[in-house]
Length: 341
Image (cartoon, rainbow, N blue to C red):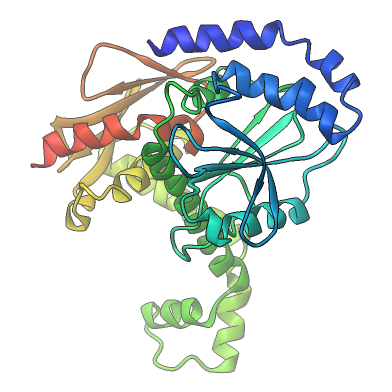
């Protein structure tokens, strides 16, 4: 069924005459008429049943467009700018302020757009506030690929499942937060990290001199050497003579993180998830057993083939990243649970 929606969207945007519409969108009102409303039409939102224009919040603020999806209260806020405007942090702050108002209690999804670029946001699950500055998904009418179209299908009126979207969005932010935190710890050379390294080296006290000495050793050269040693150790542990690639390690880390963020998998079982790299095939396993294979990745010359739980249908991936893999989280979790319990 999803293939039909993908085919429909590709055809619709092919006939959209985007450049002509941009040329005639000289202000915000024209941008809404020529770009934003037609975009929502393509996604099958009904202008009468689903849309509210200039929605008045109790704080006296007006939201450009809100969608109630058949309910009594809006669940999606859309902030609109004219086509020639660049979307800025101030625009995001404005949208967040609407969502943080009392009228935004039921809002689950927010979109900032200039009619060309559509940035999608959700509430920060850690703070219960709308304060994300980076979108979890962006669709650009001038630049999109098949992966973007597949993601956009999830936001069509007949397909939208806000609960699933929230899970995927929070997975995205969780992984981004982890990588940013890890990066900051390494680059800022936190005293806690230096103290831990010194302890592992056999040191008892982290004096200012030792702190400076270890700090100087934390650099791109030492991290690269350590990375190479980890890769070598992993390849020796799994299968002698096989070199595990950066893409395969990235694949493993993303899949494991997606599984770790599932409420259906116990924390203690995450450590049972490992990988083995065989010639021509990279496998993610439970308990290092080939009989407990969650999924496999095979690299081709131009893309990757993903196979989940030994099923015959092959999933083609153009790249190994969070956005490409998170759409298969449900299948990966189900496969893992079947092998764990």
